[in-house]
Image 1 (cartoon, helix red, strand yellow):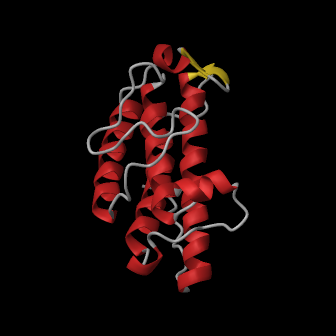
Image 2 (spheres, one colour):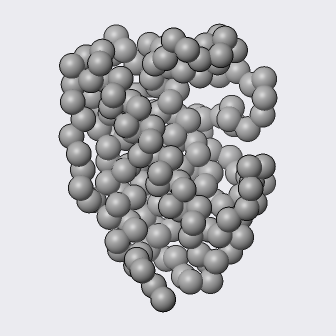
Length: 172
């Protein structure tokens, strides 16, 4: 029995990506490189992993990777690096708003195409990661939740630090 169809899934996934885009667009320049949380492990702070722009990058990196369905052979598009894959990695530099918004549009297109073309057989394909295995269709839902979680983190930070309230996007 099918509960949701590809169009429903895309409308909600697209809305989550829209909310991430809005947070990246709305961040004042002076907050782009600010630390989001004070309670992060020292190694995260030292590497810049808790900065506004980095959480945007992290979200897009995993959105892109999870649309692939496997870690093996994955590489983000230039100018981005594989800094999410191994312990002890350091960031090459601060990515700009324009770079992240470009990556977001790339991921949006990939996501839309992936969902539009998703078959029952593709959705049932088992995907394996260090943290576990699940069917690709469920990985898409997991991915959507991850995007929305971090869009909310960024939106909350903007509300607290810049007085900007995130606008809810009901569907794309």
